[in-house]
Image (cartoon, rainbow, N blue to C red):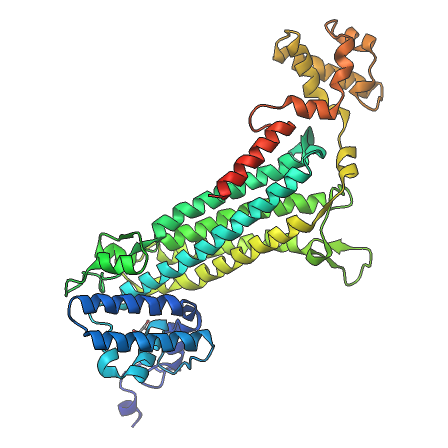
Length: 465
Ligand SMILES: *[C@@H]1O[C@H](CO)[C@@H](O)[C@H](O)[C@H]1NC(C)=O
């Protein structure tokens, strides 16, 4: 009788057995959380030392456990770990394997007082901490490459833009220093996040705390955490460190995306300021003359995917009740994807900036005399005229040059200048020099050579810490 074989099936449908095979797949996290195998084994190693310290595991059992954990570590590292049906996640897979190696009479003790809730939170924090450490290194390296390039090309001038309209002349190195400043802030922010990630949830149990008085400080120290999370309910349910890490990834990718967009624009024939090296561009399959900045477009495009990881996970957790809920398993895939994307992106961006070629002549040819209209206004300011007035006078000079179809305001004669304002003198001609314009902006943060070199030195010092 089918009703006896399927006692739980009331309304039909595709579900026929005691368990739904698709549910196993839907529920399982091993396909992706095995990335944390090392963190999981380390967590168990230290946790069992904690159990030994309170007399729940003997010294002999502890050394057997440690031996077994090492075997498993080697199996994962060599790609020889055999996954079995029933290995729902990295924690069950490792524990099952430990039992096979040292016997379940011992392996059955390792989970005493521990829950998968504090275990997974611990594994995640160890894993994220390591990834952030790698990113600190890569982002620091990226900044150094930009700084070195800027120092070498300090003499090159180009137009600075607002609204993508030519605004004022700047140094190419000043543009580089702008992005190096963003990325240095990212570097510093990363270190602040590292400190918040590095707190120990271990020993919180399922939620209510540890029933055998485990020494949580000891566990934290053994795992290299800076401190213990002070509330067991928070310890198992907090994923702010995941959100914060993905926020960091998103903000960093936003900077990467804007950096890429500038370079894409500068690489067009219309600008011709830069040329990406062949390693980071491709030709068109149809148009032989084309060279596309694929790497830069991918960097720009992948920002969207990282933002999606952050917003998707925030949606997943926004309404879950305290404390642990299975929804939280949705933290891993977006986090891992965001971290991998960012890691690859910073390495690609480093490659792009260290190999692209600039076209100094094109950059300087794009400088036009109208970009010195502000300098013309400043000239009269130095002669005591209020800026509001000089701004207006300079505007009249621009209009006069346009009306007379001159190639620029520098082509106006002294008489014409004086016709507009009699305070113009012979020395007005000195204004029409891009290098001089740039060099006048020598206050902190400006585009004068000494100001830019100071910025670069400061940035290099910050990422060297
Ligand atoms: C889902 O996986 C968890 C482990 O993460 C396990 O405890 C639970 O039994 C599984 N549930 C189902 C319905 O398979």
